[in-house]
Image (cartoon, rainbow, N blue to C red; front, top):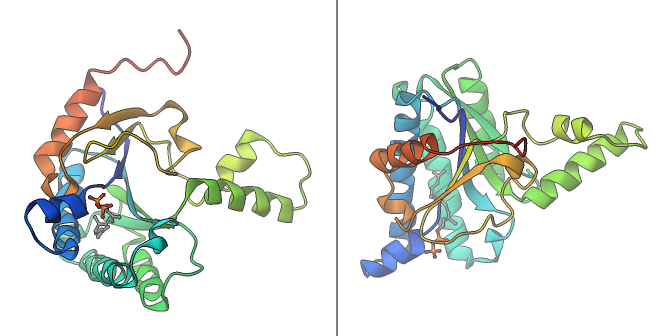
Length: 224
Ligand code: FPP
């Protein structure tokens, strides 16, 4: 079977989920964090090697301060769980700009990255304060700082935030069908899966459905 090695997810629809249930937006994010836990466990069971999650974009700072603060707290709390026994096979890595992230979350990130560095089955790439244009710009600046004046594709590849295989499958929930500055470089040959399901309703079975849909795809990488 044609299993995706790397799945990347744009987790969208927390606000609409809460609105439909006449709940405050933060309840949508809270249930969204439960979906994160469920999806990580299912990805592990399915033998997925890399899972990238778009948790906070460089554009998300424009949201009301109370919502941003709530998300930062929720992310910090969820990160704490990744050192629990049920995540013993999960290695955490981070993609994004450290600048402007609160020190509390940076400390927690560093702590969990260090604690999980030896875990082997799945890499969880948390995209936080992440923007793909920024990632490519940062890569180019790193290369220039190395003194290079002529840049190859391989130079850019090697200077992205993480050295991971490109995503085979990119999932976006909530019916929106766009990339929103996520993994622009890495998505060159990715398959896309869009579902109307809102992120707080997206659980393990929904991930399995997306993987089955991927299995039906014929990937040609432009070769025929
Ligand atoms: C999109 O919903 C979601 C976000 C901007 C934040 C993603 C965060 C989580 C899923 C919470 C926890 C994450 C982790 C990794 C623990 P939205 O608010 O844009 O929803 P809307 O488009 O319906 O308003």
